[in-house]
Amino acid sequence: MKCFVSEIRRNVSGPRMSFGRMLLVDPLREFGRIMLVVGVVLVVVGGLLAFGAKLPFRLGRLPGDIVWQGKGGNFYFPIVTCIVLSVVLSMVVWVVGQLKR
Picture 1: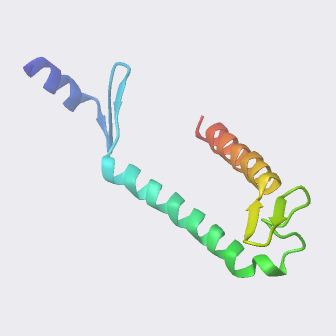
Picture 2 (picture 1 turned 135 degrees about the vertical axis):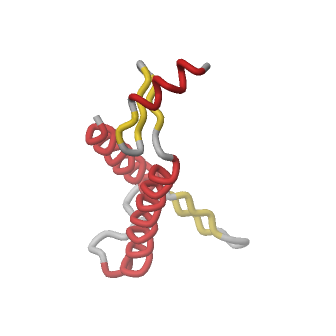
């Protein structure tokens, strides 16, 4: 055990320590990055909700979304909106994954 600790101390370079293939990262730094990403996502979603009516296309009212109006109520299923959001979010996740490499 003493040899392992001394080996880690020799490999320290800033907040990251490497020991062979193992890479230890400062948890507060990673938490800060996650909080920044969540904050940006919330700002984007909030902007879409606030200014969504002024956009040239309305998410949730795209052609192909299913709307059925009956006597007792309405049924609404935004299937095309779900597909569009899925494609856009998949592309964003792919780009972020490519940038992390």
